[in-house]
Image 1 (cartoon, helix red, strand yellow):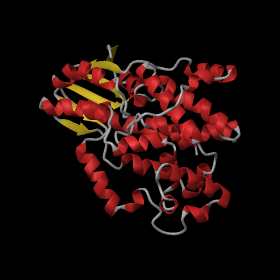
Image 2 (cartoon, helix red, strand yellow):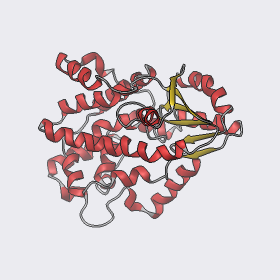
Image 3 (cartoon, helix red, strand yellow):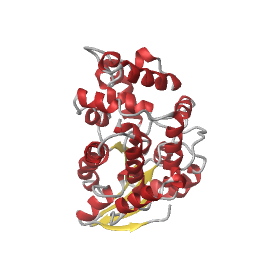
Length: 328
């Protein structure tokens, strides 16, 4: 599924994810000449492709826009320490999810199983060829998920899960976390109120909008191996620390096109639809809450939301804010 190739980029957007010791290597070291050229074409004229900390100013409102990594990494504490004065002196903080939203989600999963599960009708075992299901079941097993449980997941959710390498699951169990939660703790320690920028079930609702038959079709399109998912993780992390968030989705597009056997036109439609769901629509939904804030506001969200067409930086620019990149 296209989402499977994007899921590690989605790690820049899901605070619940974390990173243990994975054995991946940076995919950029193995790009072919054609892939390098394709990536350069996608990056040409991209608005705001770099920088994990920006200040946007308009009138009485100052916004510190911080791109976060939701994966744990030993380099993050030093970054958090450098950002601590910014957070501590803010009037408020906006993040993708606070402990309140995480608790709401956990509660909802017990009362609204349809968020991630097929609650009626056939399971995935009955909805795809046996050989395809066998591969998916094996991949789920490698991540500690019994096949009978995976069979009841909504296709988009199973795709999300299978895009993560087993090392990430190990890290989640060990309660490792990324920059978001560290910044939230700094805000709490300094009495800075923190609010979620969207309801807890927004992403689940948007992802489930695709018709089931389309989800099933995409789910069967090539399965990412454990090694591929670890390589995607390693690549994403390095892109983040290089502050090159603008390259994340274009590189995913280039790699996905080499892994999935689809005509280019069909592939591009599916990829663009996914980007629209994961990033562009959410950014547009967030903008009014960001711009209606007062005083000095820290907006700490996955770095994948910052740059590119429909990114938060471009949206703030278009809304008349003056933007300045800051040290990170």
